[in-house]
Structures are given as structure tokens and as C-alpha cells.
Length: 321
Ligand code: SF4
Ligand code: SF4
Image 1 (cartoon, rainbow, N blue to C red):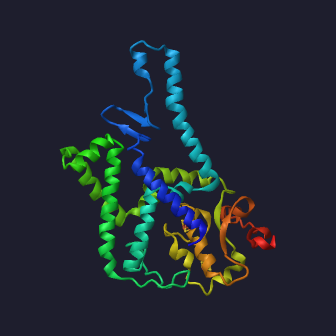
Image 2 (image 1 turned 30 degrees about the vertical axis):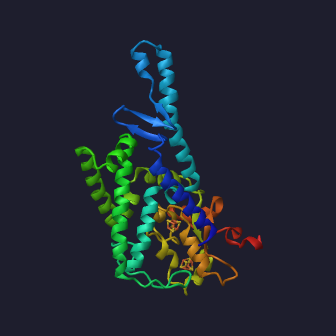
Image 3 (image 1 turned 90 degrees about the horizontal axis):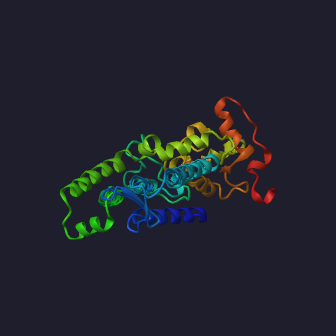
């Protein structure tokens, strides 16, 4: 595993823990009993109750709406759009707790049935980018199914704590005293997540996640945004490779294709990592790397029928610049 993949694993693990613990420490949650949000340990209300009871005037109420409502919401959206416009779906590939589950299940499914998804038409080659072979073994179903069940339960439980006080939920669970509604939520949620994780996890990331969709749209709007570029002048070097970059992609994309066909790329960098391993004996190095600005146009402008030539500096190894 390269350093960059190690860092990514750390950020994903950290954010997954944050996702579970944020409601516990009132960092962020909605309390349906109190009918307002908590944010960074504080009650997050619009302060309009004071206006209704006459404690503040209309100017103060309008200021409250602006500072406690519009500013945090639009500020978060602007930050998300800005980062995605320049770097794409970084949130998905480096933080999202759903994508960490997707990747974990993909890897285990690869070990179990030789494919990352039940819907892949062809088995993956046994030889991985690093030369190590993965022999599918049905025995791994005994690990995969309990793990997916555990992920599903944890997700349903975490979501419930985003809606009701975590102390109440975890306390009730510990004492076996969940209310009927809480039990129904947990059961239905666990079953729904199990089905989604097993059968539709990529479909969710591609078509159903609004956070992912808006990141992709912002990214597509910027032709010079960071993208996984392919040095097509050296395409002949791919001849001896079993398409390791395609095989490893957790979103089941083809990283050598144009940007439009990589609409849902999560910038995880695993394809780049795979190519570096395949080409480790080649002095010219990897054929795939993150590029931006003019170097990104070969990927993005070609979407629109143009054939931009790749500037010579884009794929030069660092030591030859
Ligand atoms: S194309 Fe590469 S960077 Fe994008 S999701 Fe696939 S493996 Fe990750
Ligand atoms: S780009 Fe790299 S990993 Fe992908 S097929 Fe070519 S040599 Fe293999």
C-alpha cells in the first residue's frame, strides 16, 4: 500500500468514527423530541421563540435567521461546491462513511466470488497489480454476510441517534428496552441497508446520493479540475497489463476513458496506485496520474469532440522536469 492510500485509509477511518460519535457528543444531530438541531455541543435553533414571546425585535430575528440559518447552510454548500469544482468528489473517496463500506465489501466480495460486485459480468483476473494472486474462495461468504449485517445494523443505529438522543437509544439497547418504534426503525433500517450494501451500493453512489451528484456536477463544470489523466502517447505500454486500473476501481469505472465517462470518479487514486505497481519496472513510470489545468483538458475537452494535444510536461517523471 502506498503512502497516499495509507493516508486515505486513515481519513476514511477517522471520518467513520466521527460519523458514529458525532451524535453522541452533540457535534451534529437533530433531536426530534426537542425539535431542533445540536451543533458543536450547542443547541442550534433559529431563536424565533424569543421573537414570538417578544424578547427580541424583528431586526434581531432577521439577523438570527441569517447567522444561524442561511449562513451555515449556504456556507457549507459553497465550501462543498468550491472543493468539488477544483478537486472532484474528494469527499466521497476520502471521507464518506458509505464509500468506506462500499470499498470494504468490494474487497471481500472479490475474495469470495472473484468480482467486486454481484452485477459485474466477468470475473476479475486472479493476478493483481502487485503480482499477488487472489483465488476466490466461497468460504469468505461466512465472513462477508456477518460483516454486511454488522455494517447495516451500525448504520441503522447511527442514523437513529441522529434523530433521537443517543443516551436514550444506546441505554435502551443496552437494557433491551427499545420502544416499539425504535425497534421497528432499527429492524427495517438494518434490512434496507443490508439489501443496499449487498445489491445496490454502487447504484446508490452513482445515481441516488445527492451529495455525490452535486460534487460531480460542480466538477464537470470545470474542465481544468483535477482528474485522473492517462498518458495515451504511451498506450502501447498497456499491452502486457490485464487492465489492472479497471479491475481495481471501486466505482467500476474505466480510468483511461474521457472525463464524462468518469462522472462518478471519487478521486480515490487506486487506479493510479495500480498502474504504478504494474509499471514499477518501467523507467517512464505510471501512465495514470492526477493532472489539472491544461493537462486536464485532454480528458475533459475531448468530451466535447475536441482533440487537445497533451502538453509535453504533463506526464514527465518528476526527475526529468
Ligand atoms: S477512476 Fe480511479 S480515482 Fe476514480 S474512482 Fe476509479 S479507481 Fe478511484
Ligand atoms: S493504464 Fe496502467 S494499469 Fe491501466 S491498463 Fe495501462 S498499464 Fe495497466
